[in-house]
Length: 309
Image (cartoon, rainbow, N blue to C red; front, side, top):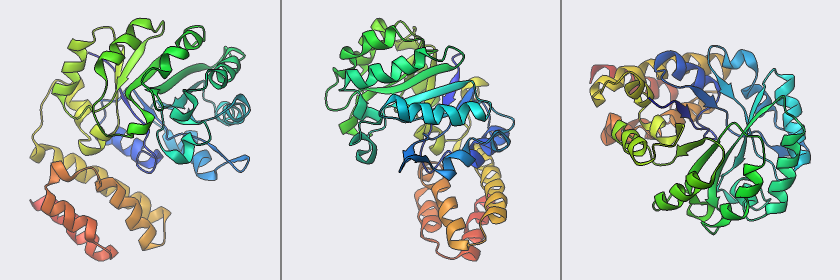
């Protein structure tokens, strides 16, 4: 049985979601926070709040950083260590231009000197367990080959590989054969990430790559929050059996956001993100109706009706 890790997704897997998912569904070895970044020389307040220990009680949370150089990473590391974290994941896979244009995320992969700069800082902090989440490259699926020796010489607990390139975003096929090559050349434990949406997908990856040390799932868990639980407990739930878990998570988020955000529109925006990937489980008609709701009272009526499906 492989450990299952919950991938970080900006705007979706923030602390309230992580905490509630852990309580309701479980099955996750560690949750990774959406990446912490530097903006105008400072760390955003929302990122600081998101990794606060009291906001992540009861679960294993690993902060993730995105940085183009060691100075940015050092600033983020100072924050995470001051909050009591002894682990830090480094994002070298984000495909979005708002980050890659600054050589962050997947944008750092074509620049071995920048990767070396990051890895030099890692070596200066043996007290911290560092890991890296990455892609094969930015525009070429061979970028990783130019940095694998740097990564192999860096003390890392593991590398999570999403076998696409940055310019693909989340489209097109994952490159399984290039993943196999990476797996064979990495001296570090490798975790697989990418297009896992079912128990069968997990088993297929297990069987195809017996050398991997875990599986990280993002969108697949947003669309089926019980997926990790089903795998770790060796059960299969129907969509109808999954809906009570979804409702329980949703109701807990309604309570949290109602206490946190007095503005109903802000509250509604936060909660619609919860449903965005759930169309395949709750049905298109119900999903469209919920996503079109513009008034808080109407939204609550619509979501309550799910329990009587």
